[in-house]
Length: 601
Ligand code: ADP
Ligand code: MG
Image 1 (cartoon, rainbow, N blue to C red):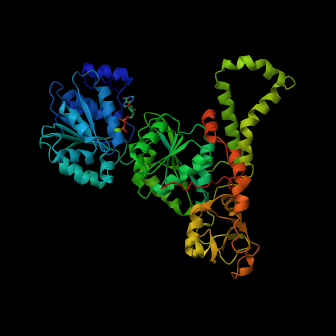
Image 2: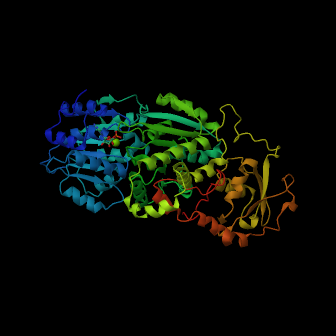
């Protein structure tokens, strides 16, 4: 086991390393630093995220460049603005004792002229995203013709993101005899191609197996019906009160929706995806870093920049299409020597994907059960007990102690504890009291697949006060219901659209959810009313109607809705003051499905 001294770094760098609190080099550093210091060579280094790659190329680059010159000698390309800023920041920390060092970040979404001005002042090292770098070159705002060291950081990601041409273009403006150091977590064919094309007999180092997941991360999967995905997510969060997680969805739309639902249900959640402005993304990331957000719901592309060390859980709300993407997702946890858990929520039809992932990442998944209500209540109660036990007393309370004591004069300690805990606990208890088992047995019939339509005694028929006048035909209405209710392909059936009203069926078990959802749901400015129809809905008869689409605006717009709101009034305030506990909006799993806010563009 070597030390940073053994690797041959100079005193300025060693001093910075001491300041940073790094005691010993990580494996990739141990392997890469001596090679890069001792020889002028190209290098391909494969190592997981969180293994310290920045320092593995950063220290050698700082050691080798001439800080007394103002010429740009080092160029580091990275896939995202977020990473670009992080690397810049790290480089400045590593080089804090290198007098005259100037590291400049070049990335989109910020003034190009400001960046050009900074470079003009003499930047020995530029850290850049490919898009903006190319822009700068085209506008002749930068001279990289004297580059001696170029780094392609997260090369696989850059290629994934379609930066191949930009990279080729940028490198064509650099000297042929420079050294290129490529760092990547995985080695897909495109990376190998790039290495061949741009590098001269590179040395290769690998930490762990290629494409293999770090051993700090354990992998779990949970088998549920597709329609229970969201409930399952909430339970996983509730069963881990101190969760600090990234929740991955496949599309921007799902990402936004899951995040909104979580927020409505009182979780400290946020969304991160490409439809948000840079400003919004920065704010979300800031809250995440400050631990104000416990569940960051993200798309794969948007999450590429996330480099937060203490993420406890990665939750795959949906599995990615590419298995390599799974490696990246799970690599967001278990960083910097910590352990982490990567959870996958799967439906029956996806479960075989787990096997393929296992083969590629060379780790086994553990099949686990979604915790039931009793488990969660216990976890929450004990978490609360611990929190109280560890709470520092606020002595402002002292002056009120006499009156409080008077109030509790007749209450003994056990009783007092029970009452005190009930304040918080009853909400969880009520919420989970009627909760159902979300787990699906591995051998059972896939409910999303073959539903038996002829057998509808298990289904409920509903009346809904929208119809063809509102632009619906049966397909549109079915899609609409599926979407707002988050139901699976065949979960809404027997849809029959009339002029100003319609009918549809769902299975009985979704009844509560359907009815709860439509208590104050508005579509195009009007309250949508859904009621159970007495008619089973075989022949599509007219007489199971309720007075021709009569709206219930009278009932809906009045006290009822406001009462409900009032019950959860200033939820956000409570959330803040409770430091992360989750007030529930309703008493049952089903009822707790929230209305997606419609205001988003
Ligand atoms: P990667 O680029 O491989 O994903 P980073 O370079 O971002 O990893 O490093 C991950 C974290 O580990 C950073 O917070 C970094 O400061 C820290 N780190 C890097 N090297 C060491 C070390 N030798 N000892 C302790 N922490 C380190
Ligand atoms: Mg990195």
